[in-house]
Image 1 (cartoon, rainbow, N blue to C red):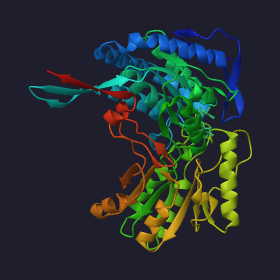
Image 2: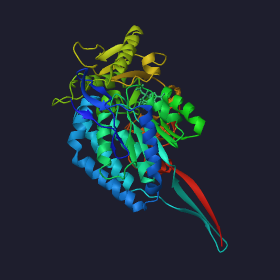
Image 3: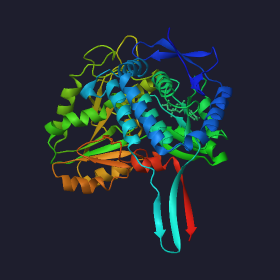
Length: 474
Ligand code: ADP
């Protein structure tokens, strides 16, 4: 069985401890990953601290060059990385609308290249005969990155590359459920980076993330994951006043106005609700549809749902893979059962198939409303509630009546009207006639309990810097 290495200070950990990684399509362990202890975490932090002065003082062009080399390495190894993602995460190699493992690797490459193209500007506030005031961006030090199991590679890239680009060094901890593509990514990066600049630790013991959050040698935590874990990290990080970027859960609402064309919008709504089998923080998770087109849109979506193929993502022609782990599968099944008991109408799916693996069918649930668990809680799986509304102001109120505020969308033939309504959604990203489409230069982040701080582009880069103001009296 292949054993994947954890790289600390430029070399694999000196340990024989490993843990098994499960393929969710079979429910069986298919590879081993080296397991890090809290002493290994200390070693990783010490290595990152040691590497920081050299790395942060490199000319910016040197770091840009390294990012370009990393992008080329990812490209060269894209097939291998996609295969690993499918095995450990479950997403099909190609998948519905091409949004599978190859899409994730492609995103990782695109984001690496985009991060290389950013700038580290010096802002000039005043430049007179007597005074010049400059604002410089300086790296924070050691960044701890904690990543989830839904997009292990792409989210690692989102965290690590801007941290490195701005001169920080990094200790990365992937989810214990999906450490392999990330471990391989770190191994590749270490072919071109100086030792200690990027280190990785992982363990299935479950305490490494907590240890990172309170570690006195880590200056910032960037975290993507659930809201309860984000709160624990924020609490632990307070002891050392760590900087934080928290990209947490979402329960994104979409509002479909009466003038939208159900036939035209159904494919895009379906793709964005079920991207990565719904295991996407900014996927469309509550669909509010005007009563005038409700049945027609339900029928269009059901026709797509009943035509897609769920199965092992390594096989050709599979649209959707399994849920990544059994605990998440149980949440999805529980929310479906609760909806059934509340009298909802299932347009597709809703029954867990027999056999191995954590499979659940693509499930559309109509005649359901706010106040049921499926609408109020983030299911993070292949199930979508479709809610009827009469009055658009009421739909907006219900869309905003959530603790979360990651994304939202409005669908309409009248783009101007939809844009006005979308700007009243309480969320970090609002889309018109689309949802969950990200751009490497456009800031992405949540409001309310979806977290704080943004990723991507210049705004995102600033999150890895502190500002130093130079007041130069002439
Ligand atoms: P899920 O419950 O869906 O796995 P989490 O938000 O708990 O999502 O996990 C995301 C990441 O956070 C994983 O890398 C996990 O190991 C890590 N993690 C879990 N608990 C903690 C914690 N208390 N402090 C820091 N990180 C944690």
